[in-house]
Image (cartoon, rainbow, N blue to C red; front, side, top):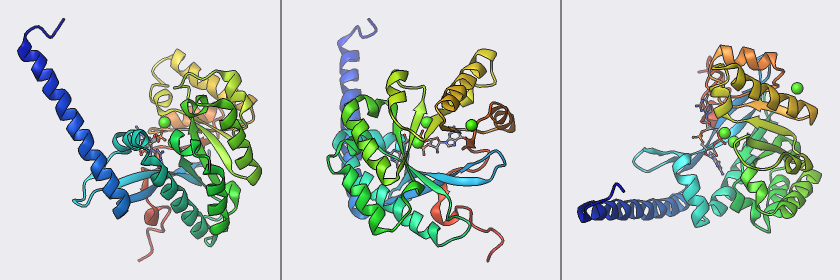
Length: 276
Ligand code: C2E
Ligand code: CA
Ligand code: CA
Ligand code: CA
């Protein structure tokens, strides 16, 4: 054992106490942030094989009153544990519908899709389907412009209730993407029962893709699987021309990553930079 003396044990306890108080503080700040609306949706373009944007993924950003950004990787898990993801998720969905309404007035953006990340807790809410339907009606958006990104772990919660909700939303015209594909533990037979439109290859596969034949083969296999299920395939985390070229050769449809653009505020998304 590494912890021999009592001194080390109490040091461990102190670390634990620090971690708890840090968490309590962050939770308090998160509650306030929801009240004060310190959030913004950033948009990251998704492009086709010709590098032309076909839509975007909305990624939440929390900028605290002192200007400091807190990463979603730090606060989304806390928001999920505390249930704060429910009001926050509703805000994200409404904001996305507002953006889509604006896009509809703009010939350059009218045909684009906007994807949002939906957390398990949010999706589990009994009123989730009705809420989305009401927002689509309120902002008069074309339902197929809105895409909901779900992770494999969300699907495992209660497969029949989840499938039922997905089917109800699909009947309204809403589209679905399976996010972070390959990082979860769900069985393929489950996944195939769910009528997804899009499969997103996780950044972890794309990052190492060109390191070895084996790693490239995994990406190839994922793309072939998606093709056989007639899904649109999005590669996440594309950072280099080499990755883009290789994925294009494998028949990947859509690409997202720093090579094309980082996530940007809505006001900067495909903004004409030559305009005053
Ligand atoms: P995700 O849904 O897998 O989102 C992709 C993440 O990869 C984003 O991190 C994005 O900024 C980052 N990324 C984009 N291009 C590249 C690239 O070329 N290279 C690398 N290394 N990374 C790239 P971000 O914005 O920090 O979000 C992290 C995670 O937090 C997301 O992973 C998602 O799980 C969660 N999240 C973000 N926004 C929301 C939201 O609005 N709602 C919910 N429920 N979760 C969100
Ligand atoms: Ca996502
Ligand atoms: Ca991912
Ligand atoms: Ca294809």
